[in-house]
Length: 87
Image 1 (tube, rainbow, N blue to C red):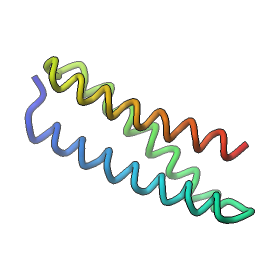
Image 2 (cartoon, one colour; image 1 turned 180 degrees about the horizontal axis):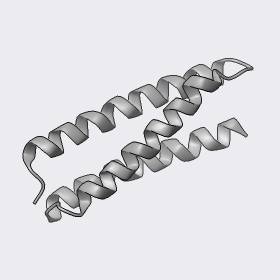
Image 3 (cartoon, rainbow, N blue to C red; image 1 turned 135 degrees about the vertical axis):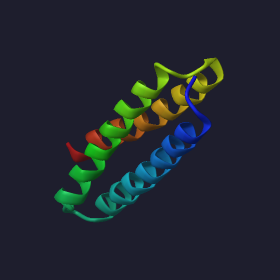
Image 4 (cartoon, one colour; image 1 turned 90 degrees about the vertical axis):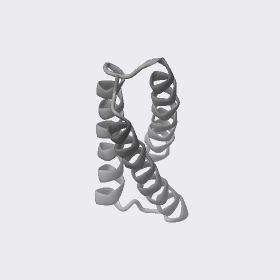
């Protein structure tokens, strides 16, 4: 079972990453041009956070896995939106 502290830390990481990526996404949609560095950095952070969630799921109990699954879906949805927007 994943410890409460490790789950709390990961949840905070997910929230911070999503917030940063949403800011980059919003900023890019308001401009004709992209802040390539910030946008790319946001996508990289989303991918790293996704991988961290997958790693945590290996040691999580059923309730934690469900919570991790929901976080993973949020990350994937934002990744997809950002990738589509960039093209």
